[in-house]
Length: 130
Image 1 (spheres, rainbow, N blue to C red):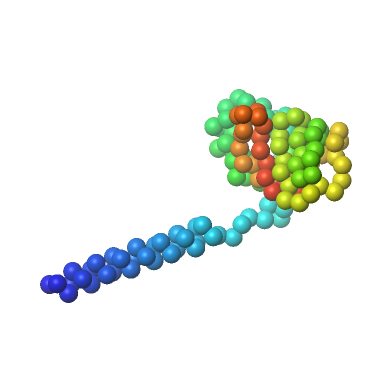
Image 2: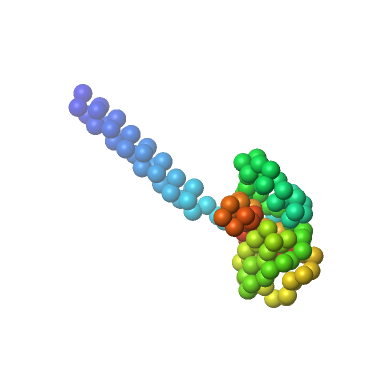
């Protein structure tokens, strides 16, 4: 009887350790997405994206959050590795921007990471210029 209990406890512990290893390596260290090679889920203007977030942030998150999107708009502010479209869509690039895009209509592809209520901006990550 004692051997049977020990075997059951050992099996449960082994199962728990296996699940932990799977979670640790399978979930936490899964391969990162390559947004640049993905086909965009949505193509829209920066103004439309901001309108959707201003109308209903939760609904907009359910549509755009963690999706690859292509946004077109006027570049209104620029730094070494970021660009702001229409004063409302913050686009963060993996690398420094080579060309000056300020005051030009630009199309950006990236992953939507949500709405920043403090700055009233939609944040886009892993951006590339189309």
